[in-house]
Length: 242
Image 1 (cartoon, one colour):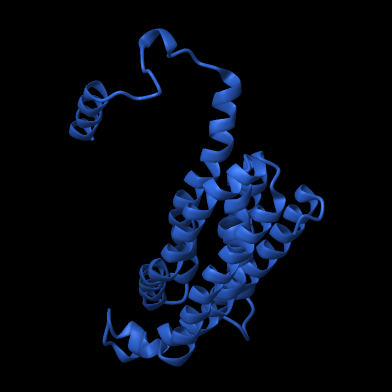
Image 2 (cartoon, one colour):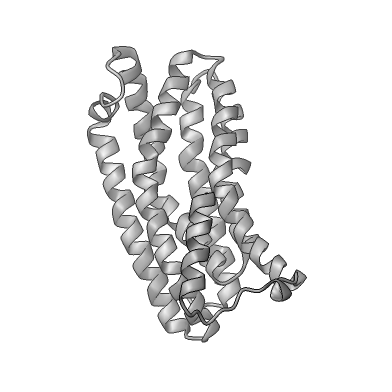
């Protein structure tokens, strides 16, 4: 990090930039700071919440067997390959949406959101199909234990039911960040990763007929509820632009 910072400073000093960095300009503006944090905190939570979620779910799964803890760990490795491309789409759409929102070009903003939904939806659909058709083969990339493969296949099939619907939550959360509405983005992030999934896991896993599958079921239910809330939040914010 130090070397990178030094490199940036060297390049900055040798080239002419429109923005001038000087100690006399480094004054804190609380309005700007508030705007930065309103957008930055939801993004940070998106990286922090999965770790908290895994820790809590591990404590629930441990009551059944350490086998399921391994299943959850492998799943979170797998879901990176599915959600990372979708998050990449969000990163790409943010500046476009932000610019057009500021310019009040809602038509182009609407088109960007729809194309983003379509692109991310295709990725999620592909992830769902693979998870449904070859879950055992996917888990075999990490483990060969028959018991783990069986439990992992069941878990992946159940959790993947929420992949496609999660597209709405992911894209709309990114949209709110792009237009500077951090509170709404935070609500969606918390619903997806924390507020719904953990209580549902605790409740459903205690039902004898459901058992450990209650933890897996909580994922698609959480995604569905978060996406519904995200949809209505955006409709309210944009006054029918979508």
